Length: 342
Image 1: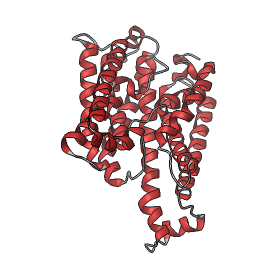
Image 2 (image 1 turned 90 degrees about the horizontal axis):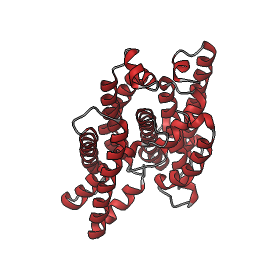
Image 3 (image 1 turned 90 degrees about the vertical axis):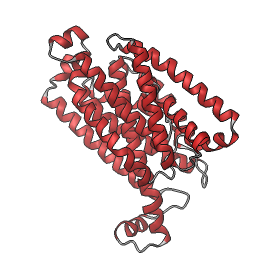
Image 4 (image 1 turned 45 degrees about the vertical axis):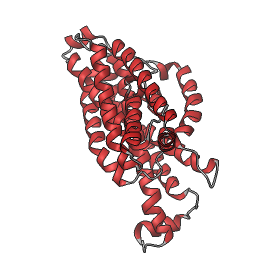
């Protein structure tokens, strides 16, 4: 299937994709239910029902409303943002191994948090939020300036600049944490990737950025389909190539920065979800983006649930689980021809 074939999909194919979205929505609902039920203190469905609709402030009610539901919401929001960011960057760079960290966003956010901890003494996730955003956006601006170098924005140069700048920023962050034990202790949990203690006080400030990134992504979807045929043909078809590239970089930065600010750097989710989405939908970005959002949310939430039971009653950070589970799954999907074709 070519990109042109996917742009105007037959009704039967569109119907199958619609059914696929409904199936993924049902799987996400099931994962949300499991996330509320499973933890260091398992809850019965009757306890959850009582907490949701007849809360009296008892211990189980507080566990549901103050711990499980905010954590579940954080996993869903972060997963959806990473999934769409990964789909955008793979389409933008034409690189099936592209992920949200390729523009240096994760490295910039990590450096911002390290500066916040070491210089300003931040200790809470909500305090890390602003520093993570600032670091991510500054890193992206530097990558764009280096990658364009006064010329039109080129995906290959942007990728190379992102890898170089990201490596440099990661080295600075590592040096800061090694030289300052207090910074290391504060960064240790955040840098592993976690949705623990991520309540509405952390999610709500980041929500407008995620909503904006999702909106821009949907606007760019059709133009990205045309750009898959080549810049010259895309321009002939009426796509604004330069504007689409700028908007795509903005969307990737908003989504990846917000997700990283909330949960820390989480790998493989944004890399893996678009591959699964393309395997199901084909190369049409208008379908890949919503499928990637749902798949990534399910994957991240499932990884968080697995992390709760691996060392019960202790926990494994979700970022570590996605690394162990995501790598073999990604290898399997990439080996399938339809999953790896952009």
